[in-house]
Image (cartoon, rainbow, N blue to C red; front, side, top):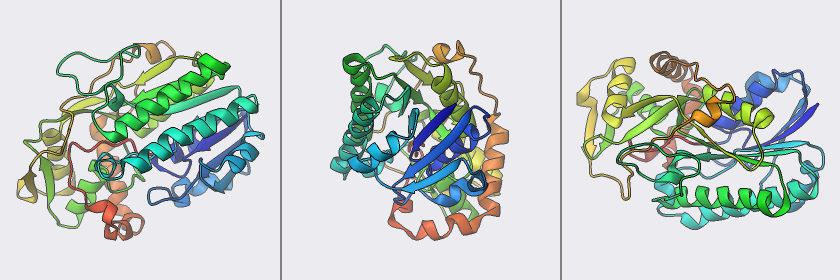
Length: 335
């Protein structure tokens, strides 16, 4: 039986993952550890709390004694917890490096002391940097452009070093942009959706030609689950296979779903160091049986409908400074 510690378990992707693994009969314990900063909310776990196997712990991955206490009661770790907003990393890079790099070191060191059987470190396609053409493979060098991506690339290397040096059974996943219900409205899809539903304008960087691959959060979680149970220690797995869209193409879909038109869109100067295109090969995860199952148009419609039906979950959040960022080259890897 598996006992799984999920860091960032009340965040966007982490909470979807917790719900997913609770469906398994071979999982006897799940602990969701979350610092409950602005993007983490216990409400994201919803009826998962009805499952007696789930425990929620409010705490920080930098808290060594707490991490040690929790690690001793688990056999596996899935590490989502991270600072993940690109724009904020441009002004608070030190915070990103502290949480993402030192937090990963704290977890990995503790996992080694307690004989953890699998440590899955969740990362992003942004570590490869912008690609004018072609797609990145797992063995390609990392070339991050912004502090957020650099902090994730560094944390990837920290995690993998614990495999090379200490034999900790680490796997790394690098996913393309995620979308779906419950995402904090600083990311482009919930940001645009909530603004359009309120009759406000949205903004596109440059000419809206930045290309991102969009993968439904449930597909990403399915891939991470495969890596947890079937991934080979020491390996990196790209999680892609979604749909490539320019910012302008994505905006057009959201305008239609929200009943708005292009009069609701303004263009602004491009963001500093805004990568034009990300792309990854994903044949390695496909060999484990991964196939994205969610159609983009259906997934977007479902996502917009969730925000339309649940304004009580996001309306208060739009009053915070974190939700005032203009985007459409903005990434969506919030954990």
